Image (cartoon, rainbow, N blue to C red):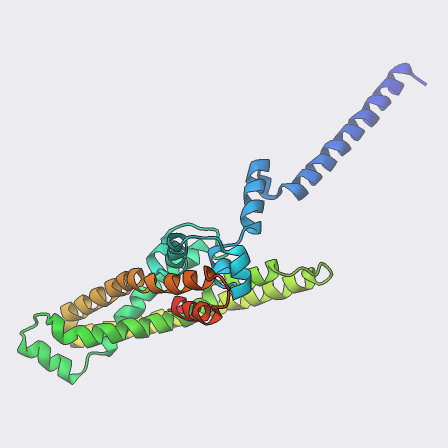
Length: 279
């Protein structure tokens, strides 16, 4: 056999082994660090996933909160704003197991919802009042309408959020400790999330089309009501942005009194604070 052929054969085998090792390392690297992430990025995600989010801490029962929740009143207050206040929740990036794009979409949907609810409150008496005032905006007269529209918009928005937000589903998966059933549970939860998101976009799309059609007809027929409607909508929407800063002062007072009690027997106060934080 020619010496040159032997050398070239050995080089080919060596290169093939080298190639295999590189491929193997590449596969291992992809398995450990997916999406071409670096080690520090993976560590950051690991610590975020393993740390308790605001929602997890706020939903703990009394005994678990006594052991785990060491936040101050101000930290708890900020956590409520991050998870409940529409503007902060939508635009402040946070690791809360929800899609940032969907959260931003929810903000604009809430504004559209506030617009349509205010339009639905316009009746014969309201039209007559606008006619008497020659189109000027009477804030005092419109206070009941503004308050009711804010409440109805908030209630409807909370129902829509049940479809849009995925944090409760993913947190339930995170809390599963049975390794044997974790893959089955994961598939079920992913299926539920896909159905929820699909329903969310279908329902909101249909609602937005209905909103647009109604408002277009309403404003075309009742031209003089356009400015009062815009004023009512802006005031009610701004009211819904301001009230959480005041409402969420109360839950922390009762919560901390319950957690700081020496005998740890204030479950009623703790449950009452959880009811308040729901609003």
